[in-house]
Image 1: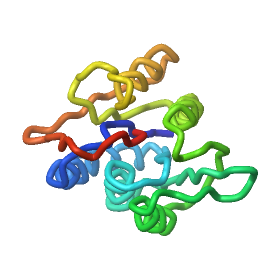
Image 2 (image 1 turned 90 degrees about the horizontal axis):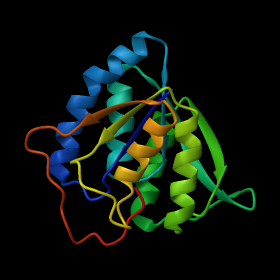
Image 3 (image 1 turned 180 degrees about the vertical axis):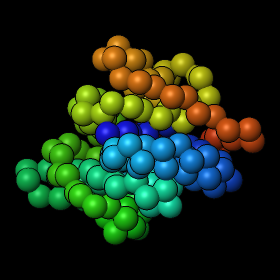
Image 4 (image 1 turned 45 degrees about the vertical axis):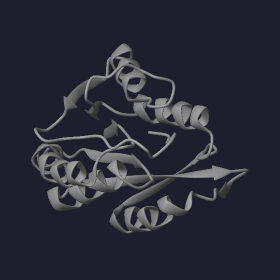
Length: 166
């Protein structure tokens, strides 16, 4: 499987660039018979899901549960989750609280361990306590997972979104 991790505060034009950039990379993965894995949410997860669909890559969407019942997502993630579910071939329910940053990080670590490859949408910034991209890149590398860092020309982050689990 292939997963994506990255900054949660990507500018809308960056997400559009990424859909295009990811398409070619994911097409190669589709030809190799791999599947994509993404935790439901807005922004990068949705861009990854759309790119996977365009590339013909089967997608697995991960939905958070609390006490074996689907967890309530933040309002801005609900529509994206619905679209990702429609784009997905499979759905996996994973027990974690989507409102708890540490629980999201632990869930991401578990998901990465199931992957052979990770595409990191990362500008190279260090772990700052809120954005977990650097941590997840280091985690994947320390577990022998192939990591490809992608930061297209013109990519930008937009501040002001507050703490958002990546």
